[in-house]
Structure formats: C-alpha cells, structure tokens
Image (cartoon, rainbow, N blue to C red; front, side, top):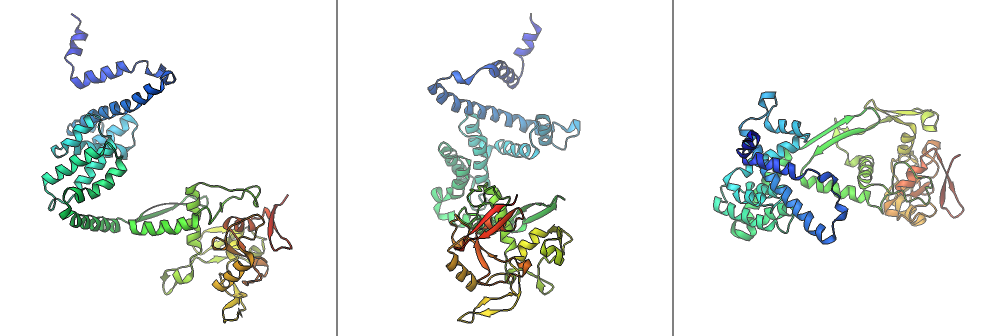
Length: 426
C-alpha cells in the first residue's frame, strides 16, 4: 500500500484544499490570457474574484485559529499578526487589520457576513465596512435583533454597492429599519466621533536636512473641510499654474502639475500670505518668522538669508518675499484710501489691488489670460532696488509668472502696451 497516499487521504480537509489549489495552479504562469474570447473574459474575471474571496474567507478562519494557538510566539513574534506579516511579506498594519476582521467574523453575531464572505458574495473590504457599521451602533439603543437585521440588510446591499458606499449606507441604515431612533443614534455617533477626533489631533514635522520638512497630521473633519476649501481655492487650475520650476517657455508653456503638487504649493501660499491680523500671538506679539538679510543679499550679491528659527533660505527667496514688504511714505486716494504706501506696507492694499486690476485686466504677461482675482501684485521695480508699494509700481502676475519674475534665469521686459514678456538668459 502506498503510505504517502494513505497519509494524504487522512489529511485535514484544509490541508487537502491547499494541495489541490497548488496542483491546480501548476502551469498557470505559462497560460496566456490573450487567447480568451471576450465572452470568456466577461465570465472568468468576476468568477476569479469570487474564488479569491472564498479563499480569503478560509485564510481568515485559519488566522483566527492561529491566533488562538499563539502561532509565532515560539520564534519571538509579539503576536500572530506580526508573525503573519513577517512570514508573508505583508505590511504589519495590513496584517493587524485582517486579523481584526478575522476575529469579528469568528463572532456568531456576524455569522451572516461570514457566510456571505465564504460564498464569495461580499469582498473582505465590504465585510469590514459592514462589521464596522454594525459595531458602531450603540448597544443601549439598538438591541441584538435590530443589529442582526441591519447587518442582513447591508449584506444584501453589498451586491450593488462597494465598501465606501456601504460605509455611508451603514450610517443611515437605521433610517430605513428603525426611523424612530435613527436621529438619536446619529447624534450620539457624531458627538462620539467629534470628541475622539478632537482628542486624537496630531501634527508632526521632521526636517530632512535638505531644505524640506516632512509632516503628518490628523485633524477633525470640520477643520479638514475648511482647510480643503481654502487650499482648493488656491490650487484651482484657473487660480494658479505650477509655482515650482518654471517651464522652458514661461509665456506659453502649460506648466501642468499633479494635484498633490498643486495642493502642496497652495498650502505654502496659504501659510506665506496670512495677514498679521490673522496671525496668532505669542508673548503679546504676532507669531511671525523674521527674515534677516544684509543689504548685499537684498541687492543680489549674497547667496543666503537667515530665519529667526536658525534656518537659512536663499537670498532669491527672501527677495521674492520682500516684493510684498514695505517702508513709507503713504499717498492717499480720493476717499483717503492709501494708493501709494511707498515702502511702509508689506502688501498692496485692497484699493491698490482694485486699481491695478482695473488697469491690467489680469496677469500682465503677454499671452496669459489669468483673471485679476487669481493673480498676485508684483513690484515692477524690485523692492530691493527701491521699488515702492504703489499702483504705478504694481503689476498683476499669476502665481507662476510671479515665481518666474524672481527667477534669476529669466529676464522680464515691459512692452509699450504695458504687457511683459520673459526671456531665458543665455
């Protein structure tokens, strides 16, 4: 008798399943999908996804048992999820998240979701969304029967909704099955989430030593929505082009950049252009970063300027900031509104901006059609060379062309029509 065959016959069913799957996949790497017909692809792809989901259901059941047996402790792993990640190359957060789903599915309270996953009717991420929705329902208001009904309804909805949509539906499920208590439950959920969000606010910044600071933050949804609105306004394609490296032909180049880059640049502009009145105070004075530079730096002879934080920036960057700074005198307009503030103000006033916008009609660069509301005011004569903060000295430039105006690689020329052009220096 073949002892190997006998041993295989008495294997655990899950071990036999593993062997059968491995045998079935032999040679699959050499099988080309290009030979499949359209109708075969239409049938095969969803079927393979369901098969993968059913295998994942088995995987999670095994993971739960492995955790019970503290698999991994014998080799010094902190827990089974960590060992699982090390053995498979999975990221540890992903392994812990899967183990959390596995534990939930092992609870009889989530039997409906577990059975649907085993049949391939819901994906793992859908199962996680359903479980999270049910688990967040307050137990003192929603009894076990109602929770089970909510879970059953969400499993049924999974046929037509992805995990993200299920999370939204999960928050509103009581409006369908128990409308009389939906408002109170939502009130509690929102208050709890807001309290946790406030308590878990985080911000960390790390200097990489190469001129950039990396950071991570976690803030409540309300403040995040406000910040997103502000940054979207600054980063909108019709508000700004790329404000980083200029393109080779600044007057006509599109300068398209990715959304993350545009948002990053918008965030820098958001911080940089805060009025002093809107700046928090520390020790009775505005919390402002001070730039110290020599006259030689201001005129372009030196390479760097110093911040009061101990950091250094290029003299070119300091001169660009100085473009929006000032010192006296002040010339008043017809309604006693300052139109020429000489060099006393950091920014052009609202009255000045209106006058300049009316004159220039938008970005003054030849061929640029950016409207006034999306432009900066640039000193026609550089501040470092005595330019004043006045209507005559002001010039409307879009963010991209304003950056180029302070780039030493480019020369700005003003034509008889008042429009400016940029030429790369040779």
